[in-house]
Image (cartoon, rainbow, N blue to C red; front, side):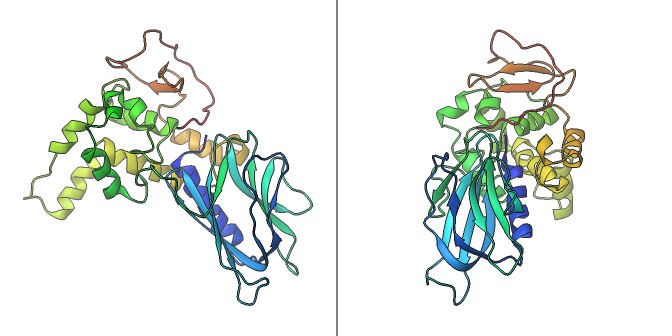
Length: 306
């Protein structure tokens, strides 16, 4: 399932694919989609994108002189389990293209498509990020860190750390494979109480006598959990490509598999949390672990997230 890095890669793909293209006409929704119609029509408009956590904003901006006169329209997408964007020839649309934006003549007849095989993805009109989601772990690190440490009294931190990491009020962008990789690198038992793990970070301060370069080196050598919530997703983004499911192409998926250290890897243990999502780990699961373990497996990773 797409997590924060995949939304950012999708946004990058849209901006690169649509650069220089002029779109026109109405936005077309598939008849089977339960998402809202998009009441937008323009003879000439451009498309741009941005991402925040597990959401992507698409902005449709009419060009000067376009008819009918109107302002921009923004849509916010959440990808569900299988959402993605593809640019395809107009006469060869991909299956499950549930929202389509067509280019205007005289350019090549293309369509930017929101493709969603399982139809759990959603879009909202208006361009507002979903209320209640916390700061983005990738783009708003300082706000993200402050939001977590300021709210440790919240009951979500009574849960195991592996479950708290999926709460998008505090960890906007973290999903199933990311939580496994982050906890594995720090050797934190996934079913340790979240508050116990995070309270120590409130007291952690680098010596003021250190120079800036020494502080940076210390953070790189000994990152804490919240720092890894920022840096590990950045590593995935830096791998490039459009995504990391097999449908993204063998090269992209091979790069992602080579990057994984824990999630779905042979020799790792796994348990299902209270939400039914599998957490991969090594060693002691922690004091809040469920009673019945799932034996170690070596499987092709499946994306899961909150």
